[in-house]
Length: 270
Image (cartoon, rainbow, N blue to C red):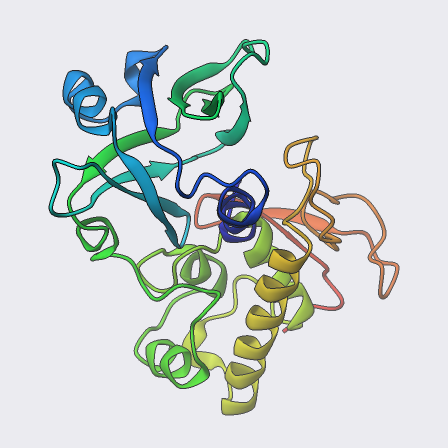
């Protein structure tokens, strides 16, 4: 948490809401906790001050903000990974400072881009090209096409849950949407990928695409009060001990690949 749908909702909000981050210039960089910056703190402030945000991109769980100043021929990119509890807000500059604020970009028009992170695991850093960060990642789960997914699935022999979590296989899926996808696909999380029939593999792609697309439309999932706007209806994640919404059997929780995994013993018996 947050996973692709939550991160995409952040991107859309910052790019499309009014006011938008796009077109805003950085007047001051304020680093409240040094650890939030992976790299040279002084350089980050020097490069971003005076630069204008021109683009906001996302790949998997990573956000990339393209900035350019009058002195720069090329864009510089601020890479952001929210990790477990990071959140980005564009707020009026005078809004009271929250307890867990880590970084603030003070912008023109009396606005501030604020990075809050209660757990403190989120990171920001500068790169000259987002490809330097995404080179080791698989294709983005939101835009992954069927043929590529099936081709990549055919090459591996792994349990389904750890495979979906592997960011080098497909980028953006985490614990929530892996569990939700496997439940809706009626596949046990410990099932091996090489045991799937062609029809099952094709169905897994369809369900994954449907789950990620719907979750993006609904602004992600609201788990433990994080991402309050999220309305994605979780069916198994975090519901251990509660009845399955399909068959009524209690949802189980096991560890698969060292990750807590929720599933229905009846609906996902194979």
